[in-house]
Length: 67
Image 1: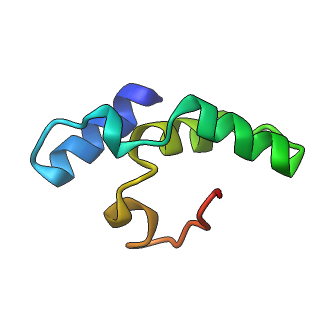
Image 2: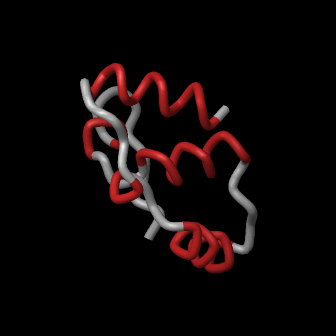
């Protein structure tokens, strides 16, 4: 799943992704602990890869900020 998300995102952005484009694992873990759930794997991967890019978070579907 990670490769597919990464490939689509890079194609849409016209540039390679960087680690700064996604949320850190610790940020996601903190979110999961505060919610008392584990995010589904595809949503976890999505936030890990592009979770800080507004174009993906609020363009077509609106994602609630996980923090």
